[in-house]
Length: 141
Image (tube, rainbow, N blue to C red; front, top):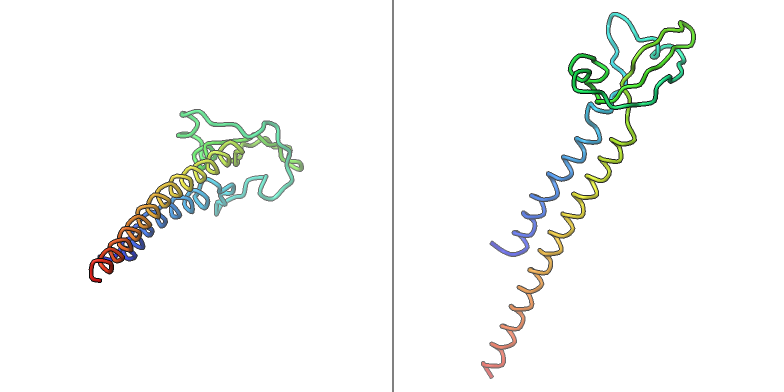
């Protein structure tokens, strides 16, 4: 197998899974903030609301028992303006966004190191082949 073909296969094996995991993390269900039921809408889906409690992490019991907590693991308490009804709503956390960002950065740094090592190994192989070719040409004179 040629070096370029091996390099292409190695690149595909490393880049595709990394991009898939990042894409899944970014486009996954954890960012869905609305769950539209066919029977009724929440007041915050059709009305203006104010946030009573900022976005906070749910405890393990809440994650299993509350639907809004199960979606993202974070919840905020809101008050709808017209109905004056207090509800809980799933939310995006800046902590979760930051964690996903640093996970992506870590994957890219690891991928960079691996690919730099592959380039160095390929360059050494090519240098060795070139010096062998020159040696053979000198010996044939």
